Image (cartoon, rainbow, N blue to C red):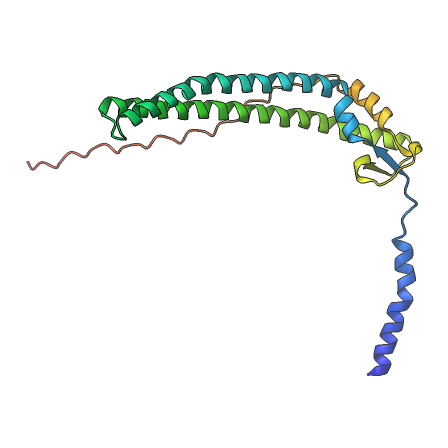
Amino acid sequence: MKTVFATALFAATAMTPNLAAAQALPDAKIAVVDSDRIFGQCTACVAANTQLQAQRQQLQTLAQQLSAPLTTEAQSLQTAVAAAKGNPDAALQTRIRAFETRQQQAQQQVQTQEQTFQRNVAYVRQQIGERLGPVITQVATQRGATIAVDKNNTFYNAPGVEITDAVLAALNAALPSVSVTAPAQATAPAAPAATTPAPTRPATGR
């Protein structure tokens, strides 16, 4: 049994060098890209960022416009409830319910606009990302690199391995602008209306 085991072990050991040789990889040539600089300086990025900042400002203005009268009304209601000693009459209760409805509607409106803004931001990133990947591959290949890494994920890189300038120029040429308005979300098809079977007429005897 020991002899059989030793023979098998020797055979496996003898095969190892061949396996390692088959899996040997060529020396890697690494290119480095500064993604922060790309997203901060590319032509489409700068223009999109300016437009997105304007959208964010509009959203903040809307929230302030909706909250100002609600704040005033809330203070008025608190005073009225205090004057009623915590026992509001029917008219005051109606005012409170109306206020709560307006508050919910305002919150929903701001939330909807916030969701739209976030979709726009994601859409901008998607458009840039879809073009940036092929551009990096193209430039890295032209420079003879076999790997491209983000500069933010390295501790050190020599200036000679960075291709950010070339990537930035190529991206500006390939993608001069992007849309800052995400496509409308597809709505789920409405469920077919349930059909009500026609009533059956009672049988009549002849």
